[in-house]
Length: 405
Length: 183
Image (tube, rainbow over all chains, first blue to last red; front, side, top):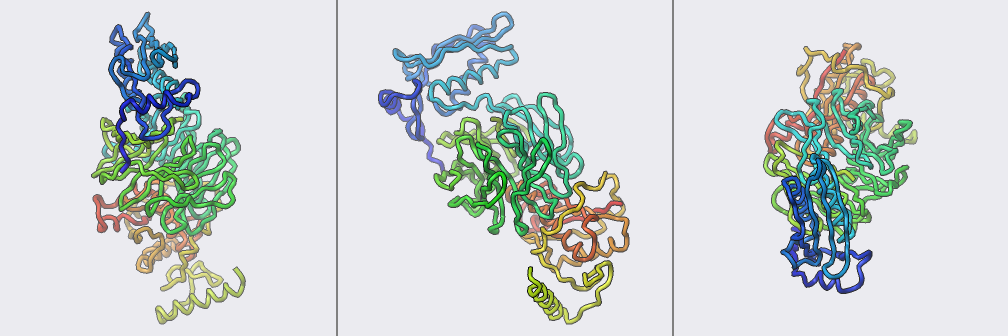
């Protein structure tokens, strides 16, 4: 069970403020348990309904970010003031944030169309997080996932990080599996049985164009683009056994990375620098995590991980790897360094199975699938101890979430 | 593999088969040159040989689904697998041998082997495991003399259970390979 740390009284954080000078005027929240920054939003005003919506979304984003405790007027370590309204068909949000009587942390105006109200709030929330705690936000991220509503077909959907704006992407009435964002968040790679066999496809979101990247005999799956967008890691069985390959997109040239003919490989993901790939192999008898160079060579097993199997690795922007581990018969989400150290189990032992973790761009939260009974739902997990947030409004069974960078 | 080891393996196989069955039928069928053919009562098969033989062609045969022979759907029994296993158990091999005989007698027909797993575990890993099961059946078919170019594999992982529900009695029905045929 993750240790759940509710905010300690503002004392601790005040001490952090008074202590060593935070870089670039930011409030330092370094470790879990050190509490949250007391944030006073009482200076925010909305003069119309559109403005009120923007502020409501902003407030929810800031709470979900995990870094703040929202407090009453005059009690904040950081005070935010400003106004949100629509003016001449344009939505406008002005924000001022600072340490009362001390430093200014942010002064910014955000604009958009009324239809962009939520996006405007998300952008403001992410910049406020950055300005106050110096970490990337996650409010503007989008999540692609697989959803099944009755029947056997699985389709791709996209939603905002807060669970709003759910959009159905495919209507193929077949199996669509394991979607992954490209590094710029403008393309998706996934596995589809569109031609009755599992092939790897690419979707360009700007044009809606879909192209088939890999359709060799046997299995084509697990496709994920490298951080520079030039290469595709994937699992193919064309040489007689499921193995890990890298395909250069421009030439479609393949490099075979593994040669484990008595084992299967699955679920590759790239290191943030694109030099290595983490993947699942059952060479030791049960599925475990391995890391190999992007050109091949010797694979090394990630040591010291919990559970009798580890699957679904997600290599995060800060270098930590999240995965699903089978512990006492249940799948739990854990994180560890690429060397296998610093293991922390971050999903609760509540009898549910937690699978398919994907790092949010803030390197703090994970989006994952939570299966309980016969139902699978998406869940936002906090590696620093806030309670899980289940996206229960989405109908059907949701699996394989992946967050955009 | 050195020549010596090769001979040891063959000798050991023959001994094992002879002692297990007490008889050995003459090799016949397409497996000339000492390669066992379908119809042999027993065939040496080494699960460790799975994974050696891929496809020569970089592409699947065109429009496989449109060429499925509907009358043959469900006419051949599913092959079942143990938990987390992909070897074709001895008790299941006659089912594959029946398919091999049919393919030997119908040279214009190819087979699609669908591999499936039970619902437990990671869906992505199960997709690979299902493929490995289909490949194990393919491997046995090629051992029986069927050309690998006539055998396509397709994994559905845990996505297409044969039986709904949960528990070992259900799971054991879902860990399977199924056959469909195309012309």
